[in-house]
Length: 397
Ligand SMILES: Cc1cc2nc3c(=O)[nH]c(=O)nc-3n(C[C@H](O)[C@H](O)[C@H](O)COP(=O)(O)OP(=O)(O)OC[C@H]3O[C@@H](n4cnc5c(N)ncnc54)[C@H](O)[C@@H]3O)c2cc1C
Image (cartoon, rainbow, N blue to C red; front, side, top):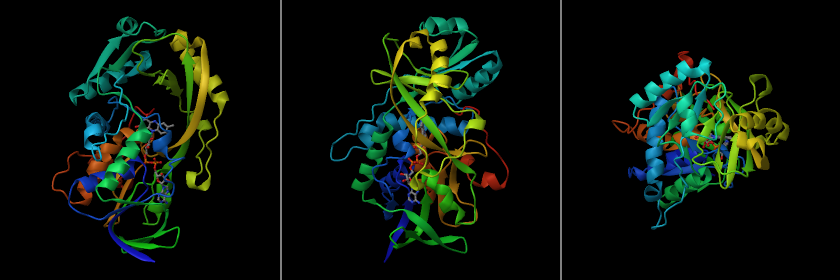
């Protein structure tokens, strides 16, 4: 069977659904087909995420993307409403609190200067001010901290994904349950995609937004991306004491924690030598939770940093996969080198949900050859891999 459409999007997670929504909302009338093998999103990063948003990055492009993101999230109820029904994405602007020891305080101050210059609302505290502002915090070993007064916090990532999807459908986008298994390439142009049921879909353009499944598809264009699936676990717990104005806390060790419902969620990246690649989720993958990791690496750090967390009751936990760009830990967004009509949005590590509004708008503008894009994400162009020009992000959580 053969079908024809203007634009195919491989992957219907938050990134693919945002691209689809922005294409449809532009009103330029392209026919858009989103192919997603698992509409339950059971293993998609977008559904398993900590769904938090921060301006505290070290790369200007990431700060710009998250400033765009927070503006979009604040307006999401209006912008993504369908027939008067406003989606509820549960945005809470509780701020991130990045903590630094003596070793990290110079970089923290440099990042703070850049973030505020670009318009982020971040306060810088020395250890004395930290104690006053956050009385539940142990400042042992700390020299400074930066806290987002506004524009940072957390939301419901699954609801954002569903809101993009619902609005895109209302605007005429077709979502189909199918996986793209191969690309019909000819001289750098993708003529069609082949689906797992054998259907050929001829297309004018293809956007690959397939999370940890993207690399297999990109390779078929003759280009390769060093994006690896990495398992990350999220643990939840309850604490008897009420701690007022608790933000998303990032300890200098990398352990993080934020409020979730009546309790908290937390996690940490494993050390590099204990962080093997995970198999792609469509091939099974490893989604096992290792509670020993919480007991050995997460809880001891949190209990030392927040003494009230010495007595907690652990709750549910789950694991998801980051699509991690080993080259420079930044996303790859833009045209696939060597092709005329294939686009990529991948390699987001732990910040793809907050970047989904900016990435969707940027790629929609680029694919429709809009003269000036609403946001400039050209620093994330995949061609930097060929040019060996890393754009290193120092604040990867
Ligand atoms: C534990 C964890 C915590 C995180 N915390 C945060 C956070 O606090 N803030 C933040 O901004 N981000 C966070 N992230 C990252 C964020 O969730 C991801 O970057 C983002 O969801 C990526 O969206 P996506 O649409 O690219 O990928 P996904 O949501 O994984 O969607 C990709 C989709 O592509 C589909 N697919 C795969 N192969 C194919 C194929 N061959 N054909 C068609 N479709 C295919 C899959 O079924 C999947 O549904 C976190 C991620 C994890 C795992």
